[in-house]
Length: 224
Image 1 (cartoon, rainbow, N blue to C red):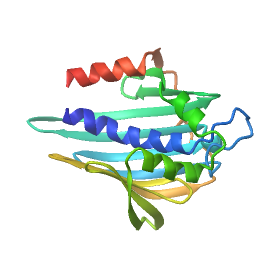
Image 2 (cartoon, rainbow, N blue to C red):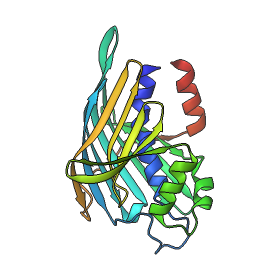
Image 3 (cartoon, rainbow, N blue to C red):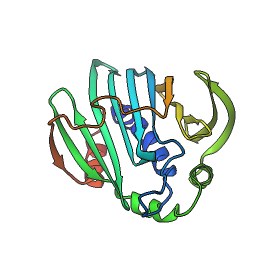
C-alpha cells in the first residue's frame, strides 16, 4: 500500500489543479488556464527521491511531465520510476497517456470524472473556481508562504497532505506525511510563457494500450 501511495499521490495533485483551472466552454478560444504555458522543475524527496519536469501548454489544454525517481521500500531494494505522463483535453473529455520510458510501453485512459467537473465549472473564473472546488472537497486554507521565490497559498487537502499554489495556479509545493510515508515535491525552477520542452509531450514511438482508468485503479489497490 505504501508503494501505491508514493506512486500515485502527486499525479493526483497535478490532475486536481489541471481540472480546477479549466473553464468549461466548448469554444476553442476559451482559455483553460491563466497562463498560456509554463514549466516547473521539482525536487522530490522523502520515501521517493528524484526529479520531475512539468509543462502546461495551450492555456491548460495540455499538461505533461517526466519523472525519474527511486522509491524506497522497507525490507527491499528501491523501485526505479522513469516515466512520462501526458494529459490532453478535447471538448468535454480528458485523455491521459502514461509511458514507462525504460521499455517504451504505455497506457491511454479517459478520465471518467472529467465530464462532470467540466459541466460544473462552466463560465467560472479559473482562480475563483479553484478556491471553491478546494473548499467544497474539504481542503482548508493554511496560509501564505514563499517557495523558491514564488508566493503561494498553502492548502491542507486531507490527513497529512498539503499543497501550495500561486495566484496564477502554478503548483510549487506538495507534501504527504502519513505514518511511515513522507514524500515532498518542491519547485526549484518556474518559467512562464515558454515553449514546450523538446519531446516532453510526445509519445516517442511508444507502444500504447488503451485501458479503463477505474478498472485499472481498482485492480492496483487490490494487489497492494
